[in-house]
Length: 488
Image (tube, rainbow, N blue to C red; front, side, top):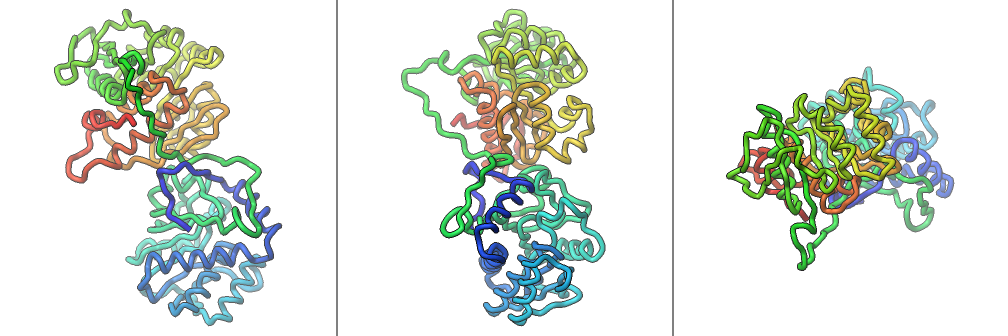
């Protein structure tokens, strides 16, 4: 058992894959083994996070997640704690393993109650787990969720906070907000995207000893997604020059919106691009940026798109539409952000040019936020957020390119690739301009020679890491974030 290390790449398995893994392990192991291991792991973690807790409320649902809670209760009882179990099941109408754990808890002298205790030192959420996808909490369960969330005691969720969908991170109307979650057997995608990061708290993992020793089982199917890990260090050879790291051209900055293009250009510069050119669409208001004289301003028509990674759309307004056909046709590496995405959503000829890029192996990265993704898919932003993994994969398939669906647990998807969920970043990124910074960073990674998928994964991780490492005092603003990017 270990806390999840967000710097390590890890496999994530959805509901269907987890069920298959569970069934395969149960076919090898003696009956009831997995539940006994799960209950012991929960009890051990309960002691670790609340070593001085005496009174422990364990809210148990009617299924196997409740059985894990019952199994944990008997261990806590034997170790001198005072667990109080409220159970929504019955001995005559519950799965066999949960029924066996109920009898073991009764034999151990565990206290069962009809109503939750008025106060406790620790709460354990054993209500639904994976079962949240098939039923919405209601009645007594919903009332208990309200009490779990309203109390002052820490809450340990078994496998998933009740109400959180394991595949999507979308919460039910009534959902537990845990301080700790022990994910069992597999790590689930929903813990790391959408609302998962808000409600799961500190995520822990226990494989229930199914990958080693007696009864070891290796999944035959691949993961549903990967949790991104820290990108590898890429030291620069001493015998390098500015041409070694590629050129980035930023095309955007319509009248009144030049700041967005300058943010993207600054980010590309600090992320390691050899040279950064800026083609503003406001009629040529700048020939030099005194704060960043390294940026080179050019008329858009003079830029050789075929020799550059082009970042287009940042502050582009409606004007950007006229420049997208030559960019999509000529450039081997393109990042489309903001107004370039809005132009794409309603323009079939542009969509044809975009999808044609895949046939000539040109790299393309789209970086939509949920509303931009919704426009591209012809749905609502709420529908995108209900299943972020599916939305990102749908966009990648439709436009035959890499997609970065921004938000909590940013998702990177591409045709033929298992999607990646990024674990870095926090709410400090929810401020104007940080998306422009990300677009510039992706452009720099493309210019440096990475393919579209790897460039997106590495840029997104480092972008979020910049927020994670931001000092407590100063406010994070996009311009400062761009200047503090660590290329490696």
